[in-house]
Length: 160
Image 1 (cartoon, rainbow, N blue to C red):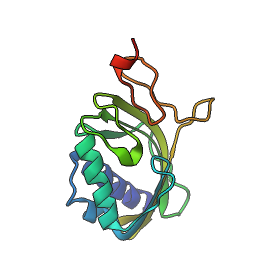
Image 2: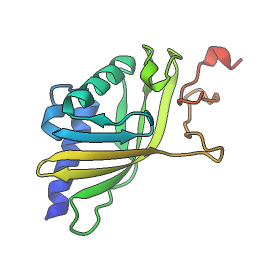
Image 3: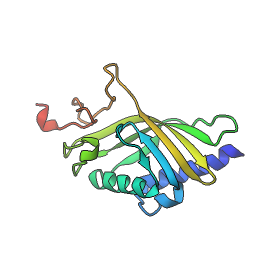
């Protein structure tokens, strides 16, 4: 029963994220949500307002950004949490310096594992870890096959 309730919350969260629904964020994350994400390792996002601001900026920079689950979520027995293996992808059309993304036109394709803790009917904690390559840098593929920079972007004009 707990797995079904968590799955509903998770489905609602990903629907809001893929619609780029800033107002809808308040319906899927707790007011005191904590987001610890490898995309911004020197900063932990605290609270739904800050969470909204981060994603508002991210969606402005990457208006076609999508999140998708690569496998079914993993639900530990009787715990109000789950783990998702996913991918976020899109094209950078505006710089997003907070993430070090400045190569406008670059394609973002980032694989991640995220732990979601759920309190009542909202996500209260997210820990997102990026997939690492053998070099220790985040592993990202680019649409044109070029080598991505440190933050997962490529600029085909720099690759010739």
